[in-house]
Length: 231
Image (cartoon, rainbow, N blue to C red; front, side, top):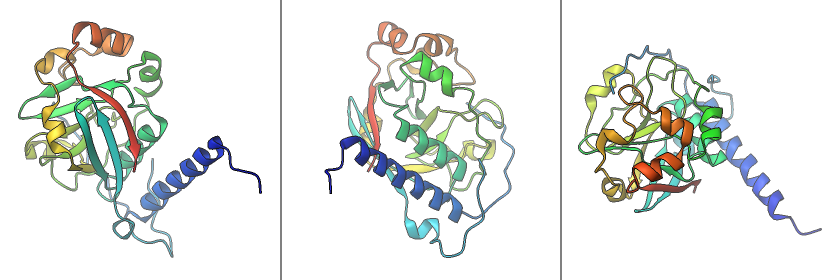
């Protein structure tokens, strides 16, 4: 048998990971979507013979940053559509070399606008439907940011404190930081809302149009997301 090429190995791993996501999602129980009104896909019925998402366990994503590494446990049973989108973005490398453009002390850390404007343009209107809110927006949990119902795309945030008020407005956590929360806490917060703000409050047009070229010039102290990978 001939040696397997590196490309073939990567392709095999990619296929296995996507299959795992499909199994996790197919095992999640179908629920009705809750309409979302914010403040700053489709699931398949469980198939016979497939273990439940809980039995399969969460999918861990390691996020390497300029401050160190933190790990997110993604729970497809919490928010199936959000989990699927996040894992797809990680797998594609979308988040690599992004900036943590919104870090608000005692609130959230947000990222998800690509460093390459062409990549942002490709994904920014690729909306997914809403998931119901299952677990609360407590410290360390991650969810998608959005403007109106049905507009989740690429931007996500991690709660730095318990933000349970976000639960009633439709922000559905799909995972949580299981190690390295001190790294999340250390991400540079000196610019607050000025370096892009939220998708509701801030003007993000220049980030979308110019990417890291703009952010690195205007806000050079922002921390970087170096790469995100499945563990």
